[in-house]
Amino acid sequence: MLNATKRRLTTALPTLLVLVAAASGLKAALELKWSWTFEAAQWRDLGLAVLVVAASDGVLQLSFRALFGKPYMARYRAFVEFFRTQRAPEIVAAGLQAGGEELLFRGVLLEWLQTTAQWPAPAAVAAAAITFGAAHVIPRRPFLPFNFWAIWEGVLLGSVYVLSGSLAVVVILHILHDIVGFGLFAYQRRTGWLMT
Image (cartoon, rainbow, N blue to C red; front, side, top):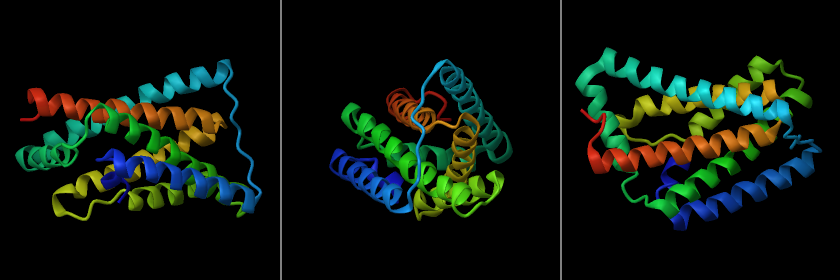
């Protein structure tokens, strides 16, 4: 669902506005607190998180490719093609939408589960990750591996939020991840790099 809105500027920007409005309203209604701190420690946290997420993406891609070979690569090509409508403005808008997603999934849901519902961090991270993954489902069979990938990404993003204590870190991380990822897809469509 949310992946589909990232394909066009006319859907990514309104979705961003809805996410920000919903998250802000829920934050106020639930009396949640968000930490926007970004000091030296958060720069370190962001740097480490970028490395961990990039390494995770690389390991997953190589593992799926090694385990499932051509069938997986056919699915990967279909996933890359799903975003064919993206140009630079859509890629940036998709990245910004990812930041809005963090306000809702980590800033509201994960924060509420931890502080109000008093769930232990691992359970709260898992619940928020499953919800995040479900919101990114593309209901087409070839995209099944990427639906699970979204859940794993939710685990990573939730863990970064819990460990850093800063919503700013996870917002910036997700924005960077999506802009770089969609930029890579555009490059792959143009050149065929790592597509076979």
